[in-house]
Image (cartoon, rainbow, N blue to C red):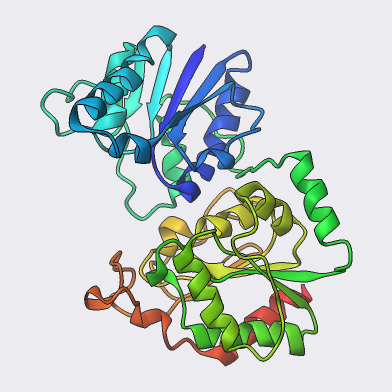
Length: 357
């Protein structure tokens, strides 16, 4: 059985397909599973023992090409799948690219979301249901339900290189215990107020007497955000922002006592590491994106907003009628009001409880 999985989305989205991979491999132990993802997201599934081959789509490079070269590159990329002679193709995202590739493979089993494009309306032999009020991890397992394949686990997994683990061991050699805080997202409208985050850092460092290690992507907007937060801090956390790869960040996080952050890929990475997560949600829905507890088989995120718990993980969100809006901030401001005035006393109380567990 030769299987192709297509997931052309962002970093966290790709990590959440790992339960599908392990269940497929368990049901088809002799199968060859290839996975195609966008460039930059591959660290979420690289080194995964259930994958035979990773296929990378360099979206930024192709976008930079002239119209003719772009078209030729797209054709070349899509038609390359046909010669692989797949038995099954699973496209986990909506849109034309995955549908086109699925159709071009000619695989006997092609699973994906119904496509409105008249040319691609027959791209799939099996259709996936809508997400509705279900966690994204559950939607990634829908292909198994469509094929009547048993779901034996719902564990999100990330694998680190030994060199990255040794690197972090050396970097943390003098630190006995720490809290990992990732205050930013590539979408800054998911961030809480800088002053609130600074208060959280100070609370962990001075009242919990525990070192805080801060991370962020090597992106100037994120670094600027971190600098703004640090300028408001009274304590002196360790700032590794922009210094670590995704794999190194995962290796760091695995050693943390607790993770505090916003709705971002690093939050999902922490949950995959079984590191307790305290996350802040605003425009995005916890029912779709809350940190998944690997010890559980059913989501306990039953509401679209408000404070919720799943196993060892907690999500802090207000209960505004407009949440989750899915918008990039309020009224085009790129700032989400629902994340700007969170109750710091309630936040501290939850951090204390999680830290003591």
